[in-house]
Length: 168
Image 1 (cartoon, one colour):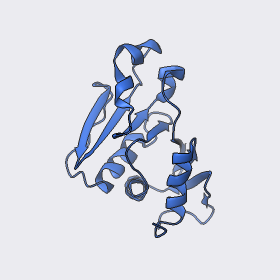
Image 2 (cartoon, rainbow, N blue to C red):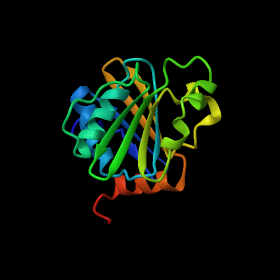
Image 3 (cartoon, one colour):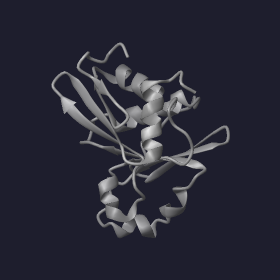
Image 4 (cartoon, rainbow, N blue to C red):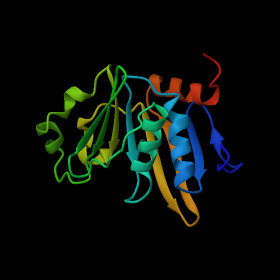
């Protein structure tokens, strides 16, 4: 990635990268999209303004979605259908209690036919399924840092594909 520093690291366990600006974040999301498949739960953690929704926009564009990508802050979830794939983009920032997730009926969205991207997963406590991939954003003086950690075998396979995109 042209906006990544040479100090970036990649392995089957995780990826770290420096994102200089919005364009780099979108490009990172597009690259990540090539590694994703239905059935994944991906959790996005970081402060307000860290780039979580921008990265989601890059992922969606990388999957072929060409329309506006809205932040789900007020709706809690935005639903995207791309060919036969459903992608659910959640934002739990406004949750005040873990049980709000359960009461909202979101459990059924986490299934083998969809990709679930969740901003502020900690607001749902331990009610969410285990993250296949956890993306942790940090705001830096000159851009953003992002770390991707694999939490499951499916997540590790995504990172293997990230490291060897021609291996399929």
